[in-house]
Structures are given as C-alpha cells and as structure tokens.
Image (cartoon, rainbow, N blue to C red):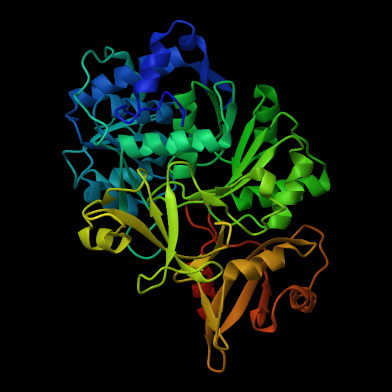
Length: 521
C-alpha cells in the first residue's frame, strides 16, 4: 500500500501537501487540452472555490453536483468540494434535463457547478429549485441567476479554516447508470476512496513520475480515479474531453510522454482499427489498463503491437466498490479469459444463490470483502440491503455483486455474466461474454455484443450484433462458421446481425438493454 495513504487521511490532504511544498507545487498536476497547470495553481484555485462554496451555504456533508466536461474547472471543483467539507457528485455532461433533475432532487444538492454550453439542459430545472446555487464556466446565458466560475474564483480568498471532517465522512456520491431503473447514488467515504486509490497504485506499480492519460469522463468512476490517483502520487494527468478525435489524443500522448493508458473495449477497438490502416506505436507507455467490460484475449495480445513496452492489465470492478480484481500482466497468456485475483487488501469468494460456498470450477455469485465497499445507496435502504449482505463476522456486511463468476483451483476469477445477462437456451446457460470472445477472435470483426431473445422452441435464441472492421468482407454465414469452430453447438448464435455501430450507455458501455429492445421491436 502507498505509504502516504493512511487510514485517518482525507482524500484532499495530498493536494494540500503538494501545494505547500515549494518543489512539488511547481510540478505539473494536469494538462487540460494541451494547457499545463501546476499543483500550486490547482491548490490555489481549489481553496478559492472552496471559500465560495461555503459562502453559498455548503456545510460539512452537503452535496455539490459537478455537471461538467473534462476541463480545468471540473478538476478544480472536485477538490474544492472536498476542501469545503462537501460531498462531490459527478454527473456526466451528456445527461439530459429529466435525469439531471432527478439527480439534483434525490441527492439534495446545494450547489450545481456546470458549463454554460449545456445551459439548455439545466436552465429549465432552475425555476422549480430556487434554493439551488449555480456556478458555470464558459459563456453564460443572459438574464439568468448564474454566477461565472472565473469571477467567483477571482472574488474569493483562499479558504482559511477547513471543516473538521474525518475519514468516515462521505467524500463522493456516485450515481450508477440506472440501466435497471432509476439511478442509485453510491455512497463512498474518504477512507474507502483512499484505500481503493492506494490499492490501484500498488498493483499498477505507479509512481510520481508517471503521466496518466484520461480521455474518459471524470463523471465515470474509472476516469475519476485516474485523477484521484494522480493527485495522491503527485504525478501528472493528461486530460482530454473524450476519445472522439484520436489523432489529437495521440499527438498529446507523444507531446507529454504519457506512460499510462486507461481504456475501455470501445477505445481499444478504435485503436486496433486505426492500427490496421496506419501502424501505431507508443513506446513510452508502460501500463495499459482496461475495465467497463471484458477485454477479449485476442485484443489484449494485439495491443502489444501498439504498446510494445507496456504491462497490459485486465480488470473487473463495479461502482459499489470501485475495483474487485486484476490479472497480473505477466499471466495474460497463462490465464486466458481470467480477470485475476482480488486487489491488494481485499478478499473475494463465490456463493450459490442460496448462500452456500461454491467449489473451484463451478459458477457462483461473486462477493467482495474490503474497506472499499460502499456504505450503501443514498436514500435506498431496500436496495442497499440487497447488495450488502451478512459477511463472515457478526454484524459484518460484504458486497454481493450479483454477477456470475467461476474460480479455478488457483483462485483466479473468470467472468461469466451479469445476473440478468445469462442466456438460457436449449436448457443450457450461456454466457454472452464467452460468445463475444469467440466473435472478437474472428479476423475482420471490430466489435460484437450478444443478447438472448425469446424463442418458443429454444427458450431464448442467441442473437449476435457484429460491427466489422472497415473493408472487411464477412457475412453472417461466415461468422457462424467461425463460431462453430470455437463454441459448443448450443452456444453458436442462431441470429447474426451485421450493423454499423452498437448502442451505448452514457459511460460508453455497450447497452444490452437497448440491443434487446431493438431485437424485440
């Protein structure tokens, strides 16, 4: 565990230390769209915004909604909220008005920090919420009770006295995507988030000289933790709004010597597609990490052509505990299909639906034990009770992920599927991930997603949605023939749809729900 991350510390204390040290204060904390900012600048801006938040009513434990793009104001806002004693609540800037209104009301947010260019979404919400204070960066709509971010900072002195927060206080309220209903706010304490950041830093083997890319939304916890780890280390984050313009991202990676490349399968599919047309090579990158969905083994191995000196990490996690497990990169070929073992300082085990232990090799529901497990869902005691179940010690609660896994005799985990993703066909249970891995192994397939659709004879038929590489000459019959070579007969898709793209959630994951709705319409 990183020695600077102690159990009693607060999430923002590392920034205070970096900013107070004359040498570290001059280090680059973040490069935002090519513009470097030092730790000294970051601390000064965060302290000034913290003063402004307190002046606008934020007290210890109050929620501050951060509805912003990946920008300088956004990274400042996260630490300013913590310094003021508040709880930061990241909201994806693609969120629409109805959902934003729900999040503001459910959380009881006192302040909304946002961007002027998305005013069309938040402006209609303000008349019904007169107590909500709004501070926005960029161009502001005329005639509205909205304060300008830069003006607020300029008019505020650095925070003089900080609230008496402790490590068990809430640091963040992170809402899930809500794919199974209304969004749920995951409550995470300073202690839990610091533990998670320290465990990640340890197994990823990161240090203060690393330069971490983040082209993922800071509202997505995978993107958020790139920033939190950076500040804990005193390292540098190279922050981009998105991966929509890969050439620009590649140029920044080279300019600033990026050493850590976090991605999701969508990004890696885009990388490999671009690599086919014009070979890419980033020798400075020493770590490549993946989460959000399983990274097919074939893709992971092909990434070595692009990142020849990188350790490639396959991982699994969920917002309710940030990260569950990781595969040591040296074992990528020795343990194909595995997402590894529990992260440092935690424990995992499998149980049957009845709560009985599951022997090696059999499928069970994954349970997670550790300091990183959430306190529960905000205002959702019933849902919290479904996820936090009795643990091995009296009164203890552990996280029941409701995801199906298999564990081998060596203790390595293999993701089988979400509890509601498992396809039951011909009396057999089929993991969509296993079928998708077979599809990704086909030369010419860029992306694939599998769902089960109702079928009178089979119970459910396996329907595969496939996106081809540009110029690939494949048809459904050829794809099915490839699958028959790799899969058991009952796992071969009965239906194969070749499409231009796959529907996604706001965090970039493939939306199986949307695919199923398309299939049934």
